[in-house]
Length: 167
Image (cartoon, rainbow, N blue to C red; front, side):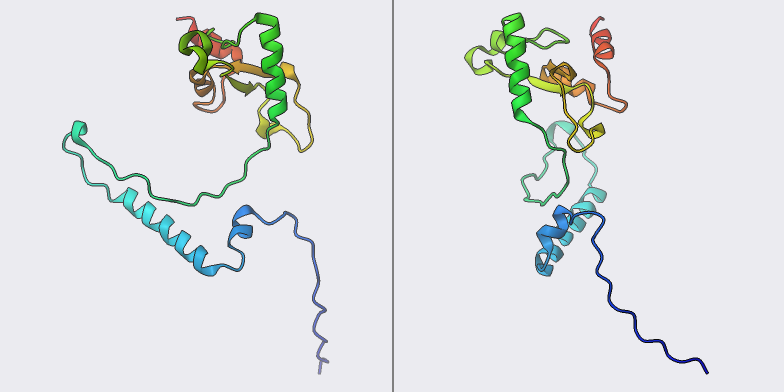
Protein backbone atom coordinates (compact mmCIF):
# COMPACT_ATOMS: atom_id res chain seq x y z
CA UNK A 1 0.00 0.00 0.00
CA UNK A 2 1.29 3.43 -0.94
CA UNK A 3 2.16 5.74 1.95
CA UNK A 4 0.30 9.04 2.18
CA UNK A 5 2.37 11.98 1.09
CA UNK A 6 2.57 14.99 3.39
CA UNK A 7 0.68 18.05 2.16
CA UNK A 8 2.69 20.43 0.05
CA UNK A 9 4.05 23.53 1.70
CA UNK A 10 2.10 26.62 0.66
CA UNK A 11 4.12 28.42 -1.96
CA UNK A 12 4.39 32.14 -2.03
CA UNK A 13 4.57 33.45 -5.50
CA UNK A 14 5.07 36.91 -6.82
CA UNK A 15 2.22 37.92 -9.10
CA UNK A 16 3.27 38.38 -12.72
CA UNK A 17 1.37 41.64 -12.92
CA UNK A 18 0.55 44.25 -10.32
CA UNK A 19 -3.09 44.32 -9.16
CA UNK A 20 -5.36 46.05 -11.64
CA UNK A 21 -7.08 49.29 -10.73
CA UNK A 22 -10.35 47.36 -10.44
CA UNK A 23 -8.82 44.84 -8.07
CA UNK A 24 -7.34 47.64 -5.98
CA UNK A 25 -10.60 49.63 -5.97
CA UNK A 26 -12.86 46.75 -4.95
CA UNK A 27 -10.52 44.76 -2.68
CA UNK A 28 -12.36 44.05 0.53
CA UNK A 29 -15.52 45.84 -0.67
CA UNK A 30 -17.85 43.13 -2.01
CA UNK A 31 -20.94 45.33 -1.65
CA UNK A 32 -19.40 48.10 -3.77
CA UNK A 33 -18.34 45.50 -6.35
CA UNK A 34 -21.84 43.99 -6.39
CA UNK A 35 -23.52 47.38 -6.87
CA UNK A 36 -21.12 48.34 -9.67
CA UNK A 37 -21.68 44.99 -11.42
CA UNK A 38 -25.45 45.49 -11.12
CA UNK A 39 -25.16 48.97 -12.66
CA UNK A 40 -23.18 47.51 -15.55
CA UNK A 41 -25.77 44.75 -16.11
CA UNK A 42 -28.63 47.29 -16.02
CA UNK A 43 -26.81 49.51 -18.49
CA UNK A 44 -26.31 46.59 -20.88
CA UNK A 45 -29.97 45.56 -20.56
CA UNK A 46 -31.12 49.13 -21.21
CA UNK A 47 -29.08 49.24 -24.43
CA UNK A 48 -30.68 45.99 -25.66
CA UNK A 49 -34.26 47.09 -25.02
CA UNK A 50 -34.43 50.44 -26.75
CA UNK A 51 -37.89 51.28 -28.02
CA UNK A 52 -38.19 52.31 -31.67
CA UNK A 53 -38.08 56.06 -32.17
CA UNK A 54 -41.00 57.33 -34.26
CA UNK A 55 -39.57 60.80 -34.94
CA UNK A 56 -35.86 61.55 -34.67
CA UNK A 57 -36.52 65.25 -34.05
CA UNK A 58 -38.39 64.63 -30.80
CA UNK A 59 -36.20 61.86 -29.43
CA UNK A 60 -35.15 62.28 -25.82
CA UNK A 61 -32.64 60.23 -23.87
CA UNK A 62 -31.90 59.90 -20.19
CA UNK A 63 -28.33 60.83 -19.48
CA UNK A 64 -26.24 61.74 -16.50
CA UNK A 65 -26.25 58.46 -14.58
CA UNK A 66 -23.13 58.07 -12.50
CA UNK A 67 -21.16 55.06 -13.69
CA UNK A 68 -17.82 53.70 -12.61
CA UNK A 69 -15.28 53.13 -15.34
CA UNK A 70 -11.98 51.53 -14.53
CA UNK A 71 -9.27 51.20 -17.14
CA UNK A 72 -5.53 51.45 -17.60
CA UNK A 73 -3.98 54.22 -19.61
CA UNK A 74 -0.50 55.14 -20.77
CA UNK A 75 1.38 57.85 -18.95
CA UNK A 76 1.96 61.11 -20.83
CA UNK A 77 4.51 63.80 -19.97
CA UNK A 78 2.94 67.27 -20.10
CA UNK A 79 6.39 68.90 -20.06
CA UNK A 80 7.29 67.57 -23.52
CA UNK A 81 4.00 68.93 -24.92
CA UNK A 82 4.79 72.36 -23.46
CA UNK A 83 8.27 72.20 -25.00
CA UNK A 84 6.80 71.22 -28.38
CA UNK A 85 4.40 74.18 -28.29
CA UNK A 86 7.19 76.55 -27.21
CA UNK A 87 9.48 75.28 -29.97
CA UNK A 88 6.75 75.58 -32.61
CA UNK A 89 5.79 79.07 -31.44
CA UNK A 90 9.42 80.19 -31.59
CA UNK A 91 9.87 78.73 -35.08
CA UNK A 92 6.55 79.86 -36.67
CA UNK A 93 5.37 82.70 -34.42
CA UNK A 94 2.00 81.04 -33.82
CA UNK A 95 0.43 77.71 -32.85
CA UNK A 96 -1.41 76.36 -35.85
CA UNK A 97 -2.48 72.89 -36.91
CA UNK A 98 0.37 71.31 -38.83
CA UNK A 99 -2.12 69.64 -41.16
CA UNK A 100 -4.83 72.21 -41.96
CA UNK A 101 -3.23 75.41 -40.62
CA UNK A 102 -6.13 76.15 -38.24
CA UNK A 103 -5.14 78.70 -35.58
CA UNK A 104 -7.24 78.76 -32.39
CA UNK A 105 -6.00 82.21 -31.38
CA UNK A 106 -6.89 83.67 -34.78
CA UNK A 107 -10.34 82.05 -34.76
CA UNK A 108 -11.36 82.42 -31.10
CA UNK A 109 -9.23 85.29 -29.88
CA UNK A 110 -7.83 85.27 -26.36
CA UNK A 111 -9.79 82.15 -25.42
CA UNK A 112 -7.91 80.13 -28.07
CA UNK A 113 -4.45 81.31 -27.06
CA UNK A 114 -2.10 78.36 -26.54
CA UNK A 115 -4.82 75.87 -27.43
CA UNK A 116 -3.79 73.02 -29.74
CA UNK A 117 -3.58 69.25 -29.37
CA UNK A 118 -0.36 67.31 -29.50
CA UNK A 119 -0.26 64.07 -31.50
CA UNK A 120 2.37 61.36 -31.05
CA UNK A 121 3.44 60.11 -34.49
CA UNK A 122 4.88 57.07 -32.73
CA UNK A 123 1.85 55.65 -30.87
CA UNK A 124 2.21 55.80 -27.09
CA UNK A 125 0.70 52.30 -27.00
CA UNK A 126 3.81 51.05 -28.85
CA UNK A 127 6.25 52.56 -26.34
CA UNK A 128 8.00 50.34 -23.85
CA UNK A 129 8.03 51.54 -20.22
CA UNK A 130 10.79 54.12 -19.87
CA UNK A 131 11.17 54.68 -23.62
CA UNK A 132 11.75 58.33 -24.53
CA UNK A 133 9.67 60.50 -26.87
CA UNK A 134 11.47 63.08 -29.03
CA UNK A 135 10.02 66.47 -29.97
CA UNK A 136 10.33 65.38 -33.59
CA UNK A 137 7.82 62.58 -32.86
CA UNK A 138 5.15 65.11 -31.84
CA UNK A 139 2.87 67.06 -34.18
CA UNK A 140 0.50 69.89 -33.27
CA UNK A 141 -3.02 69.26 -34.57
CA UNK A 142 -6.41 70.91 -34.22
CA UNK A 143 -9.09 68.77 -32.57
CA UNK A 144 -10.74 67.83 -35.89
CA UNK A 145 -7.53 66.67 -37.55
CA UNK A 146 -6.45 64.81 -34.42
CA UNK A 147 -9.82 63.07 -34.27
CA UNK A 148 -9.57 62.03 -37.94
CA UNK A 149 -6.11 60.53 -37.38
CA UNK A 150 -7.54 58.35 -34.61
CA UNK A 151 -10.98 57.72 -36.17
CA UNK A 152 -10.12 54.12 -37.14
CA UNK A 153 -7.20 51.73 -37.14
CA UNK A 154 -4.78 51.75 -38.67
CA UNK A 155 -4.30 55.35 -37.61
CA UNK A 156 -3.46 57.78 -40.36
CA UNK A 157 0.05 59.05 -40.80
CA UNK A 158 0.57 62.79 -41.23
CA UNK A 159 0.99 62.21 -44.97
CA UNK A 160 -2.37 60.45 -45.17
CA UNK A 161 -4.06 63.22 -43.20
CA UNK A 162 -2.60 65.96 -45.42
CA UNK A 163 -3.59 64.03 -48.55
CA UNK A 164 -7.18 63.74 -47.27
CA UNK A 165 -7.24 67.53 -46.79
CA UNK A 166 -6.22 68.18 -50.42
CA UNK A 167 -9.73 67.83 -51.88
